[in-house]
Image (tube, rainbow, N blue to C red; front, side, top):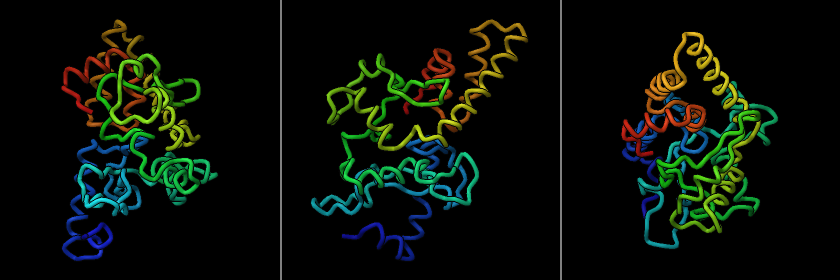
Length: 246
């Protein structure tokens, strides 16, 4: 069976790979499928292709390595010391995230290698409602209990959707200091803009609607879920009006 490594080592296959990565990034709106940091740059040291189901799985005749639905574009998970914040931060082990931390959890047997149902596949994340809550004081992501109670995720191996979301956050280390600091920066920027609009005598709804249009017109801004949470109902209206499908 023609696999991923064979494809990348073959001249024709390498040309295909050079098309796959930017296509995935474009399809995700330029953000990491896990932490939502911007990966719009095509710099190969900033992003890579992740296979949600292990590409090495040869137990079935299915070719997981070349299955388009099994591929997502992700950041380097804070693993590159030569990058500046928010792409990396010391101490490095504690600030790994995304697939870099996922692999660490698999190696330590805290996460099944075939992780479907144990953590959320970003491809299967529902567009509505938003399943994540932001703790503004710390920048931490938490499960939104109310929204989680409204959603049943197919293949969930946890007793509840809330437990699935919480385990996903932990296994991907989405609350490492590096990502929490970045989310707080986004939050502070939004709060500054809210104040400017209040000072300009905009009503609360006018101000929030204006910010939703400004922050969400890019498809999609870095830390999209953080922005969506901070803008609340205005963000949900904007996304529904623009037929957001996740």
